[in-house]
Length: 126
Image (cartoon, rainbow, N blue to C red; front, side, top):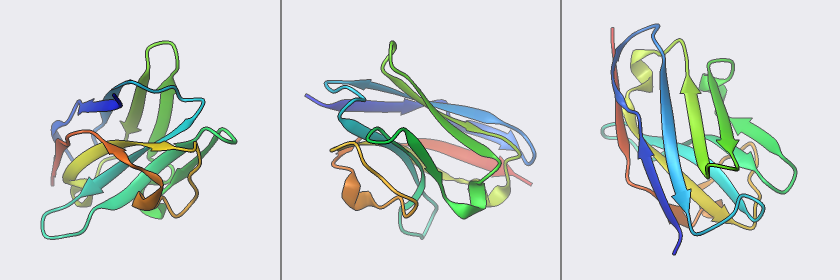
């Protein structure tokens, strides 16, 4: 059974940093892309970043480029999202997701991801 569990959210001041973690089980990164999505209050869920296993590429939403970094630890089956220089507009519930097939692209579409973990709240105060 494919499972993902996100953690690491919290309250941080603008300019601060957080690292989100996603514990995964039931699949290997060789065949699955992994990604991070977020949903702000009153808005649709949106792709933030993804790691394409098919070509080892990483992709980021324009608004987080240069501030966020996605990584994975194959030995620990963990996926991370390091978030620096946080802004109030980064406030959202963040979700990690896995996609069989191993591919994602710069659009970071939910369509590529069929397995989802529960969200973790990130709140950035101004």
